[in-house]
Amino acid sequence: YSLGQYVLTEQYPLVKDKAKQNELLDSAIKEFIQAISINPTYFEAYNNLALSYQDKGDIKNSIKYYELTCKNTPMPSLNLLGNLSNLYISVGDTDKAISIIDTALYHYPNNASLLNNKGAFLFNKQKYNDAINCYKEILIREANNSGALKSIGNCYYRLKDYENAILYYNKSLDFEKNNNAVSKTYQDIGNTYLSMNNQTQAAIYFRKAKEVSTVSSNK
Image 1 (cartoon, one colour):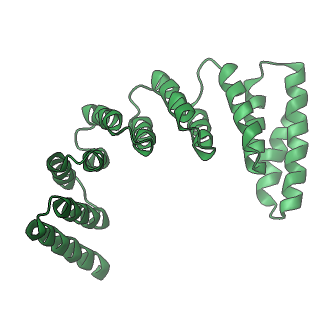
Image 2 (tube, one colour):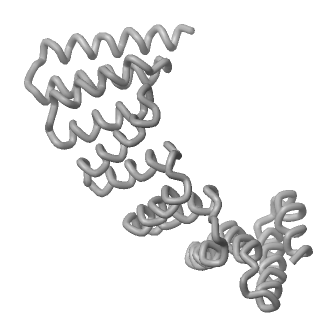
Image 3 (cartoon, helix red, strand yellow):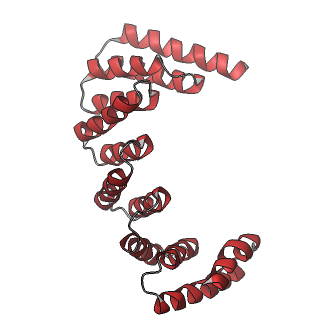
C-alpha cells in the first residue's frame, strides 16, 4: 500500500506524458488491490483505487471503488461523497447523485454547499418546487446567501411565477457584492418583465444591467 501511495501522490503528479502516467497509475492500482486482498476492509486503499481509476478516466471503476470506500468507513468524508455524486452526474444518473448528497447531508446536516448542489441537481431535473425547498433550507442557515436567493428566483421563473421570481431576484441584490452577478440579475429581472409583457420595466432593468456592466469593465 505504501508504495502505491507514494506512486499516486509523489510520482504521478510530476509526470506529463500520458502513457507514463497510465503506467504509474496501473502500478499504484496493483499495490492497492494487493492491500485489499490482505485486508478487505482497508477503506483508504479503496479510496485510492477510486482516485486512480478516476485519473485514468475509468468512471465505472472509480464509482465502484468510491462506493466500496463508503461501505467500509463509518463516516465518509465530505470530499469522498462530493466526488462520488459528481461522478454520478457525469454519467447522467442524477437520482443517484441526489441520493449520495442526501447521505452526505445525514452526516453533515449544516453544510450549505451540499444543499446548494442538491438544489442544482433538482433544478436540472426540472423539480423546481423541490429545489426551492432545498434553497430555502440554506436560507434558514444563511439568511443573506445571495446565491440561494437568486436560485429560488430562477426556480420561480421556470414555474412561470414571475412575481415571486422578481421578488427573490431583488432580495438577492440586497446581498450581492459582485458587479458581474448584479448585472446578470438585473438582466434576469428584465427578461422576467418581458415574459410578463411589461416592456417598460424590462427596459429599465436592461439599462441598469448595462450601467453596472460598464462600471465593472472600467475598473
